[in-house]
Image (tube, rainbow, N blue to C red):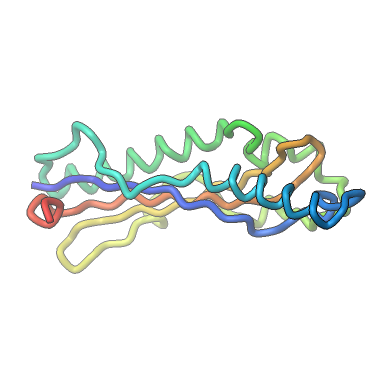
Length: 159
């Protein structure tokens, strides 16, 4: 029997220098803290997936892929003040403040390339999505959201 555990981690991978123009140093610190809090609000876990325990290994590994796909699809819709980068591409592609190469950031679909298999046959799936932290409008602080779903034997999950 197996259970699924998942998590999301977020980090700013590139700051938009326009975030801090026309403000005093104390204001810049407050803006930076606000953006960091916005990004950290995306994080959670690891948490257990409800209703997917008592699975066989093959079903658990497949369900891990499906859960990862669902979480990625939800992320593609974006979050409050954190739109998915592709939805803002036209608006920001002309921007000189950040060197955006969205097409080089990878395919956000979940495939076997996202799968890592452990010695015991359990799998984990890792994927990421790219967002802009934009609490004020007109900013493109680039955020990477890392998603991980892993299969855990039920006896280890109880510990």
